[in-house]
Amino acid sequence: MTLTVERARASAPLGKRPFGLVRHSLALGRRSLTKTLRTPEQLLDVTLQPIVFVLIYVYLLGGAVAGSTHDYLQFLLPAIMVQTVMFAGMATGVNLNTDIGKGVFDRFRSLPIGRSAPLIGSVLGDLVRYLVAVVSLFGCGLLMGFRIQTDPLSALAACLLTVFFAFSLSWAFVLIGMLMRSPGGVQGTAFLVLFPLTFGTSMITPEETLPGWLRTWVEVNPVAHAMDASRALMLGGPAAGPVMWTLLSSALFLAVFAPLAVRAYRRRT
Image 1 (cartoon, rainbow, N blue to C red):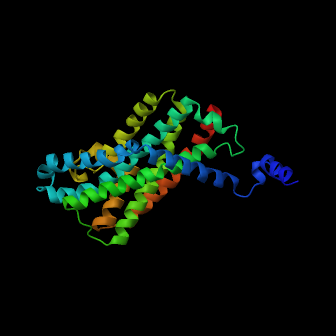
Image 2: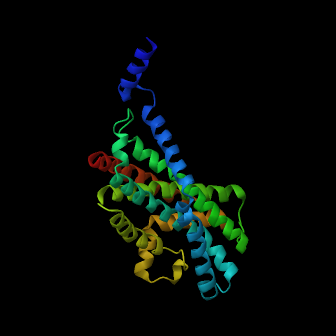
Image 3: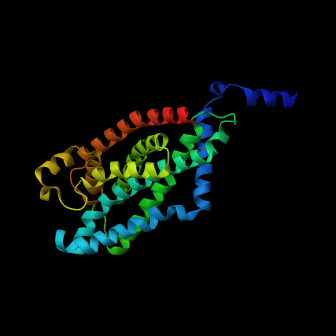
């Protein structure tokens, strides 16, 4: 009798199970996290790479742009934190494309789980990469002399806002991962998207030093708003406007790219 009941529960439609998709997505997110922890070399792009970027920018450009490496580090770090987490989001699309090519997601189709649970779980599991990127970069900055000019809660808000922005934008890279036929195609297309978004900002140099046409792009670039919000929360200055625009753009990315990515995933698998 017990065995019959258990089989009936297992074969019950997913929609009748309370929060079935959420539970399955979280379980598969834990699987993704375990896979990352067992292969720590996957974290090199969110640990060593951002540190290398900071060292290169600060010691090559600091004197020319800000007059001293310390002042330039204060200017650079909050913005490059946004760039670092965005680049980590690109890896989500590459990894998903690789797993689909290997047939990993075909095995999930035989399980009594939500059709989209493997995709959502993989994206949620990669949140740990964003957190590792923020912690490693912030720790490096503190060792180099970076100091928060506001308060710890504002700095924490800047980190959480950056992670949420990158998570929302990562769905665009997930969509690219579903549409491209190879990991190389995903990476190449993602770089074409990332470069104008990240370098068409005031990340490296102040906005007033940019030519007029580029300044126009900076004013509408959502990544530039995220960087301005991070700077304002860590260093002081008007924060309400940049934070509001960052939250709005993040919500827009989620509303547009997440459904498209899920639809493309279902068509491909």
